[in-house]
Every structure is written in structure tokens, then in C-alpha cells.
Image (cartoon, rainbow, N blue to C red; front, side):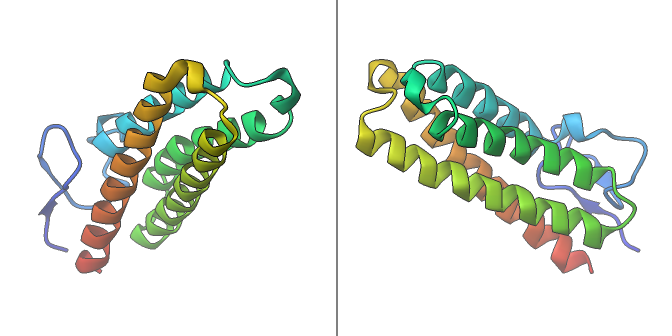
Length: 142
């Protein structure tokens, strides 16, 4: 199988497959941004009303953790197909966050932390773009 430069590695070193033991998912820019997004979501939701503890707060936090976790789990799987499947799960969770942040904005939640809300929204868009690029690159290799 030919080696290809991975579009999201900090080092931009060629990698053959997601199971390449020379690297770690922690080197993936998409994983790093997903972590930033998750932390932004946690900070943002700490300002949500207490009545949302088991509602929008819990949903946003679960989905935010899911994005980075699925990227990491997929990277550690045995095949490119499994990696793609988990990246698809991550992309789905990312879309959930995007939708839930729209609800939060419309309901006026987190408005006292507008900068954090805007940061989370920007990171959701960036992670979505990066996930699409990675998935596209992996599909071309198949």
C-alpha cells in the first residue's frame, strides 16, 4: 500500500494506516481541535441554567467527549474501514453539537459567556471540516 502524507498530522510525516504504531492519535490536529472544542463546551455549559443539568448541558457534554473519543478509538482500530466508521461517528456527534449550540443560542443560554459560545461554534465548524478532509483522504487510499 503506498504511503500518503496524512492531512492532519502536525509532523506532516507520511503514514500508511491508522494503526501505524509510530504515531499517536494525540498528534492528529483534528483530535487536538476536538479536545479544544470539548473543553470549550464544558466551560460554556458551566454557565447554563441548573435546570438544564440533565438536558442540554448533559447532551452537549456527552457529544463533545464523543467527538475526540471516537477519533482516538478509530485511530487505534485494526483497519482503515473501522477508522472511517469511527470518524463517521465523530462527525455525527459534531453535527449534534452544532445543532445543540444553535438551541443554546436561541434559548439565550451561555450569552453571558458570548466569547466562549462563539469559540465553541468556530471549533465545531473547524472540526467538521477536518473530519471531512481526513475521511476523504482515507477513502482515496482504499
